[in-house]
Image 1: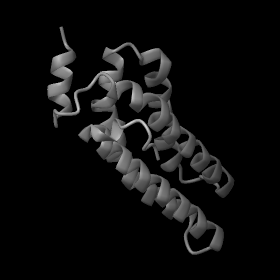
Image 2 (image 1 turned 135 degrees about the vertical axis):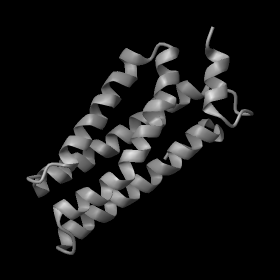
Image 3 (image 1 turned 90 degrees about the vertical axis):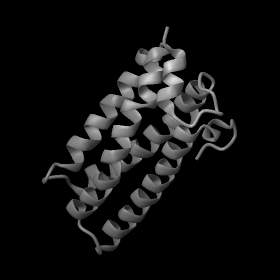
Image 4 (image 1 turned 90 degrees about the horizontal axis):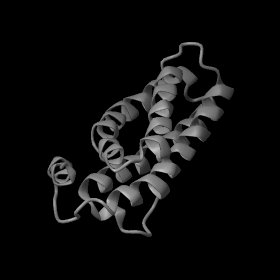
Length: 143
């Protein structure tokens, strides 16, 4: 993922970026397992959701709130939150078909790219890399 702008030097963005790496790797592994017949779509969806749920919670309660505060709700946050709801709904659908799962993984890779290459660099410019807590950084942005 993104390593060119230094946004991952911020501890919170760095943690989310590392989680993106793990999610993308798992998505690729699961697709290969489903294609090889060694994993079911339902099993793959459950495994991916186990990684996504805490990640989404962290994004939406942290970086997305800061993005909101700096005026990025309509540019990024609304669509990314809608993606999160879509992913969760699809991954809990017992009727999820292989084709839909494949399309979902493509959308997930695109979603991660938007966060990594568009949202995180913008948010990082508004955060101090010296501070280790996103909450302290958010407090500095508040009037």
